[in-house]
Structure formats: C-alpha cells, structure tokens
Length: 119
Image 1 (cartoon, rainbow, N blue to C red):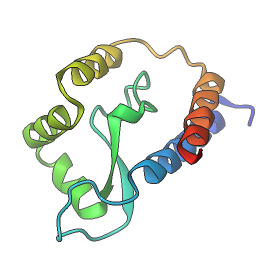
Image 2 (image 1 turned 45 degrees about the vertical axis):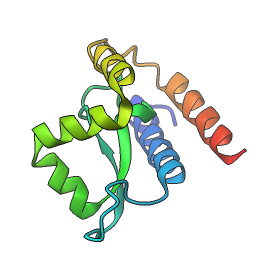
Image 3 (image 1 turned 120 degrees about the vertical axis):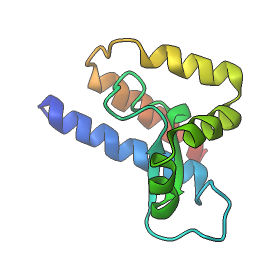
Image 4 (image 1 turned 90 degrees about the horizontal axis):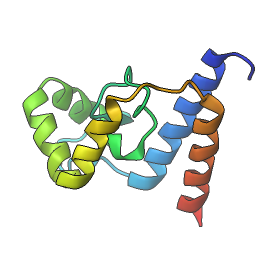
C-alpha cells in the first residue's frame, strides 16, 4: 500500500466493514428491504473530511440506499433525527474542513474503531 489511491481504497474497505459490524441490518427497519447491504453516506463520499466518519454512514439495503439518495430532503431529515441536533451540526461543520490527506491516520483510526466494536 504505497500510493494514496491504494490507501484510500483500503480505508473504504475498512470503513464498510465497520459500518456492517456496527449496524448489522438495514437501518430503515422496513419489510421492503432487498439487495446487498451497503454503507450509505449522508454527506457524499467526495467530502473526504467526513468520508470515513462513522456518524456519516449507516447500513442500508440496496433498495433503501437508492431510495434515500433520490430524496435529499427526506435523507436530510432522517439523518438529522438519527444523529440528533448536536452531532448532526458537528458532522456538517467537519464536512466543510479540508482533508489533510493523511490516509495512514484514517486507517489507524478505523482499525481502532473496528477493534473497539469487536471487544
């Protein structure tokens, strides 16, 4: 893992595993679930300052992930309710920060998160 692209891909893989281990099932709690379980982001993955922030993602089935992405107002409300006002505001503030491009730090933090989830 020498290039930034490889470290970013590895961080994405670790992040998906953390979200799957944390949530275990589609978080929409609906009988209409179908398809692969995916880590769905509230703030888009392009905002690397929050791309790997566990507050910024939930596990959703394929159906609910795409349904949520087609309804930005509903998505905003759902995440705001889920996180609460303080955490939601904090996530938004962090999303405006520049990413320091320290993928090694991100990977270390995700490994710690994964370990604490397994303890």
